[in-house]
Length: 56
Image (cartoon, rainbow, N blue to C red; front, side, top):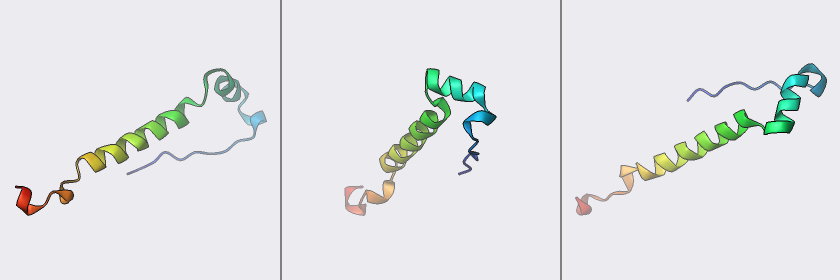
């Protein structure tokens, strides 16, 4: 899976982004965490390797 690259910048380099993060929260980071959690949960839910041949 390709993950977006993040680049750290000092607060002075992106004042608009910094003020938006303070006002609204770090939406991209929160979305990435939610997507990763959903992916983990879906992988567990769809893990057919846990089903034994006797159950079929």
